[in-house]
Length: 253
Ligand code: URA
Image (cartoon, rainbow, N blue to C red):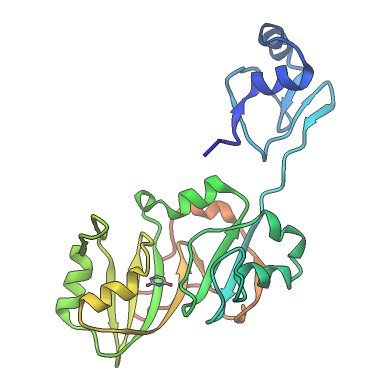
């Protein structure tokens, strides 16, 4: 995949049609502004969200970063387009955010029958940070099951499960039994049908799966199925993640 980030001196040389040797004194003079601050280093990385100007003339207008949250209803496909089914992007197109729909991608899919919180953005670095298991950002699910959870299931989730066909072992996952045939699951990764397959391995079956929260963002009570909203404070991704109340299992709103 080609990176949309490149060195500042290359951008200046290309846009101003000058040599890289000519770029150096230009940078030293302080006439180049990167995001409204004098930029003096040739090798600084510049991406699509950065603005660059020289003597007030704009060479690159930084794109606005976009972050949305969406309450996915059952039956909607987590895809940008689908020949047969309605997609989460169709929901964005039908919302007041329609104008930005074409630049967005999905940060963490849900199965077609799953419901709950999805995040969409045009910021690839942000979504990679969100989805990279190494960053330990928890995704919280509530599941309805065919049978109650057992102590052995809780241990199996915590130990990690091997799926030899894919050559993977799942990272330690949280499994909190709830009254009846319900449970809360906490994952830091998003393998294909992961929650459903882990319960099949336990001899159980997921009847309904709902994502309650991603990291610091709970699904707001007043964001109804099918609704879309701007995500407040996307930088929270880089701070502490929300944790459910250990007694009630609820998230602070
Ligand atoms: N795990 C699943 O099996 N399905 C989802 O939609 C999300 C996590």
